[in-house]
Length: 73
Image (cartoon, rainbow, N blue to C red):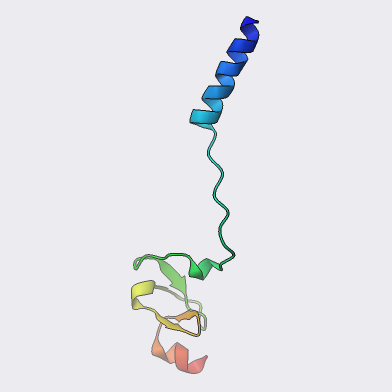
């Protein structure tokens, strides 16, 4: 009987304090549609260089590092 109480206590501690809660199911969005901060880096769809979101250009749901890359794409 004491063993069951100890096992139950360990299980309660494990589930409440140690085990991470499962992530909520996200709606099906692409990685680019997640909330991004202005300091996050994104890859240019044309040349592959990385630029901050605040400095990049969004065109046709793709990020570009400069207007030259937008024109070439």
